[in-house]
Amino acid sequence: MKNYLFILILLSINKVYSQSSPVGLYGECNGPYSGYMCQQFLIEENGTFKFYDLLHLSGWSISEGKWVMKNDTIILNSMVDEDIAAYQITGKSNSDSVTFYVYSKDDTLGYAGISIDSIEYYANIDGYARAPKIHNQTFIFGYIGYNKRQIKFSESEIQFADTIKVELVPGKNGGHRFSNKKWLIIEDSIYHSLDSTNNYDRDRYFLKVPIQNLKYREDY
Figure (tube, rainbow, N blue to C red):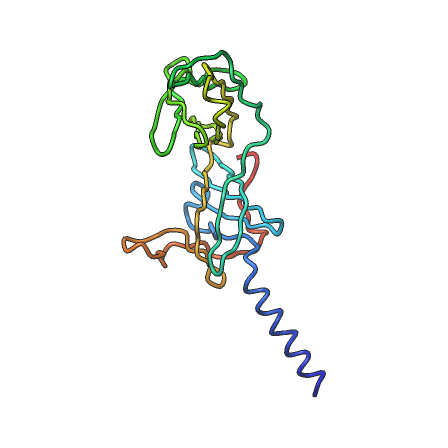
């Protein structure tokens, strides 16, 4: 009798654990147009995820990030690019604004965007932009087809800076950016969109599928 109860307890614990673990592949992509448009979401055990997005003319984009669970909600954040050169500060100026030069390894990035507290600034055709000197505020630099870069300048860095050079690196077709994105997980489904009442739309979800059903191919 004791052994029987012990087995029941173990089975109950295993059932709860399996239900609480979101690890796996989501998104069926088995419709008539799945060869042209497909989205799949892979949650890995090491706390990272990959979001695969196929758009026929553009090919696959892959967005990577980190995830954490809070109750029945998975919270997603894109990874910070670690393989880019440090920004460079050149010259000194007492002006209340600073010049940004946005570039890549191979070219200047004309008309790149700079976002500061939801206010947008844009570089000229040569990649230069003027923006106010604000310390301890996150600056977001972006350009189509490149990974966004977030930098928070200290007061000592930006106070007397004349020009700050910021390098961006190409993304895999741009990808998606996740910033504290919250998706609802119920059993084997992830609900990713809100409806007009600001509740999760129960008609829009990714269903869990075997990992062998991953459609991504490097040669597409």
